[in-house]
Structure formats: C-alpha cells, structure tokens
Amino acid sequence: MKESLVLRLRNSNSNVVGIKDSEGSLNKIMNYRIKLGNDFIVMTGTDSLIAPAIMMGSDGVVSAIADVAPEFCVKLFNFAFDGDIKNAKRLQYDMLKIREITKSFSDSRAVLKYILYQRKIFSSYRVRRPLKELSDEEKKKLSRILIIRENGDFEIHTA
Image (cartoon, rainbow, N blue to C red; front, side, top):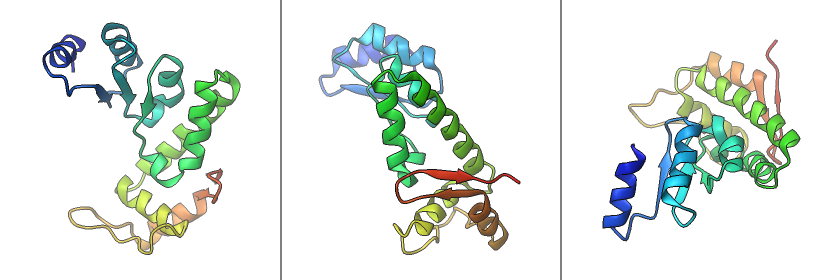
C-alpha cells in the first residue's frame, strides 16, 4: 500500500493507528516510519525482515514462526531492539533457515501445526480443509531436519 494512501487514511480516520506490511520491503517499512511519524504503529509481517525492520524503526512483527517458537523470536527481537547486531544477524539467518524449511513442504501452515503438536502445545496435528495435512513421509522428514526445543532453540539437520 502506498504511504500516501496510508497517510490520507490516518488523517481522515482516527481509528487508523498503524499498519502491518507483509510486502517484504525494508524500504517501505522505513518510509512508513518517516512519513507517518513515531506515533503511528508500523509492523513488519515477514519473518525474513525481523532484525532489519526493528533496527530501522518498526514497532514489531507479526510472525508465523513466532507461533511455534516464540522464545526464539523474542530473543531475535530483543537483540535487534538492543542494537546487538552480531546476535541479531545470527538469529535472523537462523530464522531464514527455519522459514525455508517450513516453506519446502506441501503446506507451510500444516508444518507449523505439526511443530506445535511436537512441542505438545497442540493435542493434534490435524488441519481443516481446504488445507492439506502433511503426509507420513513429510512428518518423518520434518522430525529429522527441524527440532525446536522447549526454550525455543532449534537444531537443523539437512543431511
């Protein structure tokens, strides 16, 4: 959405207080902050931009990976917010690996639900139509390559 349109909406509607942008453009996040000011809430909606968006003024993130590993995402957010570039960069690259894994399956939402099931947060891994459940082969593969611990840490085994 164009920053000028968001500015017009905010100026003409008192209940427009922020935006979540999932376009994946750091430039757009920064322009929202510059043109709409610090009193307007700017959120990124993509896991691939958490650290850079926070470092450049985003107020937060709406993250799919945070659904299954909130502890990991909180660490990433805090490193970025505190300006700990070394650790923020390391976790952001780890986030990209997790994201690539989840997107490599038939339905990334079914992957997230299965991870929640593995973490014993959900009692079932079943998804509703029209989503497709992971096949038995996909569940085995996921269990081998991505292990998310209770504290949000994870291991990736690509071999």
